[in-house]
Length: 253
Ligand code: NAI
Image (tube, rainbow, N blue to C red; front, side):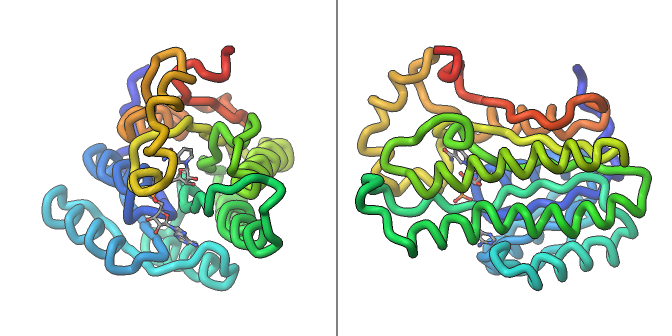
């Protein structure tokens, strides 16, 4: 399916300073979308926005936003709507992996941090995005979960639990708001080369993780972004409530 109709669509992206979020913003700018970008890293998201304005003449706003803080998420969604008058697509992408450790060593603080950012951050985003979309003729939400939202993830128990929560929130929103023409799906990537994993212990065992995939390699950010674009595409108007693995076939084992 050709993805052609992001032109003039208003797209909100969290975690847009780096990795998938940054590359998605660049791809959407090439396709004529209007962008509202947020990240905890204010300098990083400002640099992305400046580059999109200067090199692609993109209409873009950016805001520092910690997605684990409801008041900041509300303010960001509000700023996007104030700027553009509507919100067509929202991508709840911001996330952290947390430290890798065995389940028996996980602390309450590990769980709290992972749930604050990865699960509550998505819930807060959806809450205000859906409120806006209910006032329009609908909208599209894409949550960035993980293969850890579908399967177990050794030494990543808090992340795995929080990403399962993202899939649950996604399916619940799809069921509650499908009648309002609001579609909500989740993308579930396998390990992919982004700054999130570049400095993590995952890269010390890259070959092991690569061999676990039928394609014998990790994903590349542009491959995940292609799948995100497909899931977000207005043409994909009956795809709702799905958690789609983008994993080189790993989940087919
Ligand atoms: P990344 O680290 O390159 O980008 C994540 C962005 O989120 C960063 O710019 C960071 O500043 C921002 N962020 C972190 N905490 C935040 C907060 N509290 N509020 C706002 N922004 C915050 O990582 P990547 O890989 O691009 O990750 C994007 C999403 O993809 C995450 O949700 C991650 O869990 C998910 N994912 C990544 C995989 C991978 O192998 N790279 C695999 C599966 C899922």
